[in-house]
Image (cartoon, rainbow, N blue to C red; front, side):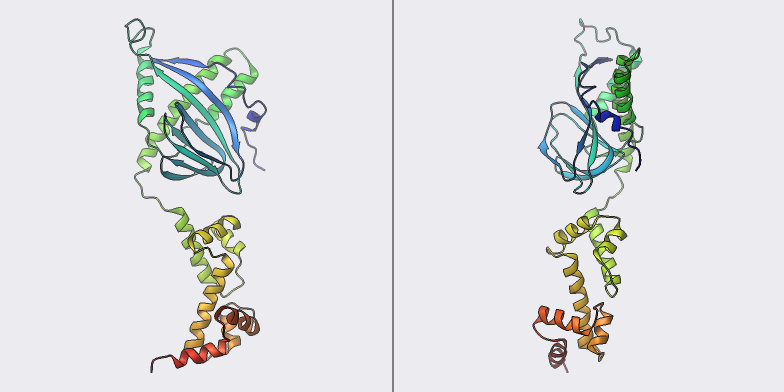
Length: 315
């Protein structure tokens, strides 16, 4: 099993939140409200909600999905997304795999003009300019997940370790990690904005199409649901749910049987092959089994079907 570097943060999940972290960065006051690692068990959902502050969500492990306003996006390890004030969002872990999330909630207040009328009071000009640039970008970041290209996630662990070790400079280190998370998130979106211009697939429809193509190509063998799942690198539950949603509520077994029976009907109509030969061609165990399945489905035997279909055949 691969070591999960953030596992240590479960020991004292509220360690960082016990600190009253207020950071002055240029003309801005940053108040840290939440700063922790949490886990969504498989299938866990958090219904639509919003916050008055900025919330950074990083996914170090697992997978799931998020709906930002009215758009759904898949989540996987190494991704993050930002929800600003009053942004409605919905979160959900994968049905079979838990999803861990590193959360940072910050309230940001612009103090420009509130320091005795001197907007540059006690500010380092370069730092103030960088803080302003970062905050302006935060306000206009698009609502879609991005990859953590600039390694903001490890800053959570750095802050936790500084808090736990309580060495000289720990408090300052923790405050610096908060600023680094903000900066690195903004930088990641600079690249993500360029990537967003590329067209994306409807992954649900794409996976369904691949699954159906695989079944049609292999129906005449001993194909199983597990074979389809392995081919698409998904769980059998995921594949079965996909079929039920996009194929009129039918299961894999029903879909496979319908494909095989369609082949049987075509062969009965167009060829002189025996029932036994047609059964093997279509992937059935034998003529007797085909006879039982066919009669249950159509109410007649294969032989009767062949005769009646040919009688209806135009001369």
